[in-house]
Image 1 (cartoon, rainbow, N blue to C red):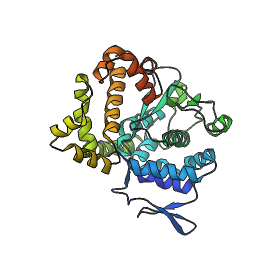
Image 2 (image 1 turned 135 degrees about the vertical axis):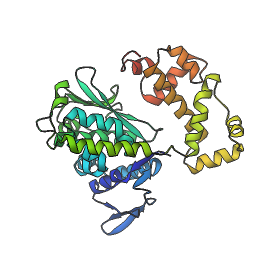
Image 3 (image 1 turned 60 degrees about the horizontal axis):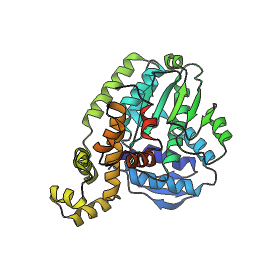
Image 4 (image 1 turned 90 degrees about the vertical axis):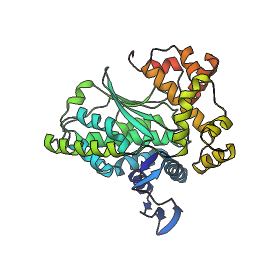
Length: 336
């Protein structure tokens, strides 16, 4: 099961005027108002974190104000060695390259990607998770926190060209623009912070090559020690993905191949908060995105490889999963 550092949950609790204790108790005004499972190794499961985030959001009348408060609460120091590595890297580019490579030590539910191939350059935030009603708010918080922190890291004025989100705006767009200090576009192609390429060369205030190299070596060790996900979801994904080119596998068939009864498969998935269909869609969506990014296969071929008999059905499903048509999604990436 994907997980998220509990630092994000603590910062969101503080933004809402509450305290999340180490034992998982959420305290407001001295009263425990909600309990989360106690974090394991400083991390919450993706499901527990998203449910908590959604609960906080629903308790708060003003989402934009909550977003602004969260951006002030979450600091680079909260993400441990990665945050220190960002601060001591020599330039903004080096900081963002570290975020791109090592974000997995913080969470495996999303990635950052530095796209410096055009003008403007972009820091892109991409989810690596199934659907959840709080994801749009999570994405806003991720970019709001990143924008504030990288502005504080650099030695000089970091100017953003724009910020973009793939989802529709749920509040006053002018308030988002005021918060980010630049135009903010919704229903865009990607979640991203855009800036002129020369901004990447801005030095960092605490840049120190020796310290940065030491911290980066530590991160290499840490990321190399991360264990493969032992969950049933992960095992199921490993079986489903290569099988999709032969059509969508049936749950009974997959269960038999895994040495399980169909009922046991469903029960164990339910224990992880999932259904067979959830994991099937994740496998199809992830494979489709990978093929659109990194292969020269036609969209019709990708439809077949992901278990669809018709391109039109695949295209409708892909737009439902990702928010973009396959061709539109592919345009974001250079030719493989």
